[in-house]
Length: 368
Image (cartoon, rainbow, N blue to C red; front, side, top):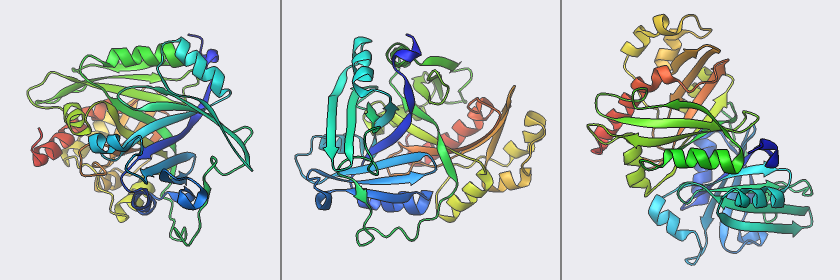
């Protein structure tokens, strides 16, 4: 498919469907440094749910919760817990993008809808992807408001923005989806055929394995290289892999983690640790072998070891990355913090150390 048939400008926002949006907004503000900038709910004329718009750098999260027992998405809370519901794309023309996607084989989640208020017109449609995750197409070229109809700037009486302390996140680097055994190639084909993405890289169970578990992964990206979606599926192993654990507790395929980029990972991780964000731990031996493996880097290795930051190098440069523990009680959604110094890869040299760290957490949970 010619990528110009469905031009995607960027990831517009990620919508989370959660049990208590107000408390989730408090968590993402105080732990991850997001500014809570807008609200939609009963006071703004929205009757079925409450939602908060959060912003940091070019990243926008929408946290939404049902207000009534008959909300159409209530069942996903029972199945998944708090989870990513929608990865929304800003497009030039919502109707054209929607019709093109359907013609290429996508299933409709919502037909094009025009939402209008005193600030103009906001256009929205959606298609299904893996599990019950969706991709919305949105356009607000004719909308002057803050985000969308129903959202109003935050009233300090509802939610004081004064304690907002950003931690340095700039943009979404990539979003990882976990799918069932045998389904990875199906969804790679979906992104290629429906959205015009291309496969960037592939990892098999020889690349991503430990003594006990393994998985396979392929990465697709849009034509501009701005949107990257790794897709994982489990591979046979001696014990239950992290993908199998996710699929069990999530109740099917879904978004496993979101990688957020920063220009200063040391400052960002220091701020996050100060905010009580918990990270996976790798052994000290990892850092003893690091100089021989990655060569010269700008950062101080002792400081990286203190903070638990991983390093990997490819032909184009190096990257630094660290992974949080799951951000809720279910071992499902977590976050990655990443800083790139030229490298466009995903830390292949760190896979073994990372997955062994995840296995140690699985063992503590009794799910390995």
